[in-house]
Image 1 (cartoon, rainbow, N blue to C red):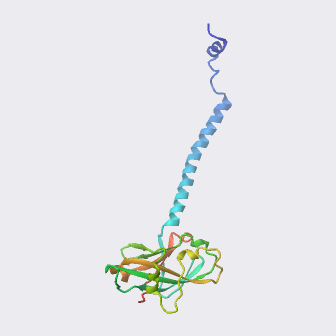
Image 2: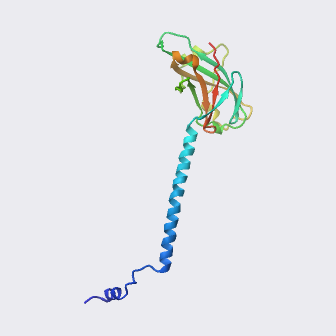
Image 3: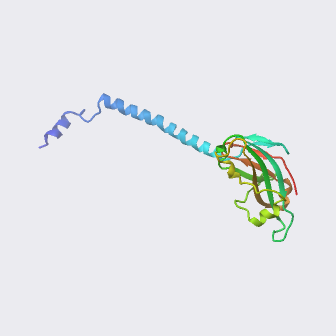
Length: 204
């Protein structure tokens, strides 16, 4: 014979049905889930877009030759763009370039995290700087009485008080044929997608 629980279940077909309160709770939970999913996707998308913006250089700020520019807490001016003449040991289709920027800190440099210097030609091709140039290469470019410059990363420091002045120096290996048309660009996390594009400044 069936036990009492089975008899009770057969006798009361509504026993396993949710109560009105349970049905209302389930509807609220489902509605919350439907709202939460798009919100979560929007948050993830916003974070991805923000991260992408911090990496891309999209909006160029043109800097005229021999003119300083104020940008995210610093005043910058391109002071030299030196192309190394042909020399033994370097393939004839390649040459080295050195750039120097005079920089005055107007505010602490936290915006200069991920500071980036590149050379760009008319076709949009880009060349990044040497991380640590060989001492022999630095001597090739060094002029009498000229102090060694700092790397771009030196700007990303909250120890740079307003009024601090320094020289930012970078070295590049580029195709010889492109050297005459290259332009220096500079950007940092606090300024992207805007970036600086300096007018040509050529010295030998």
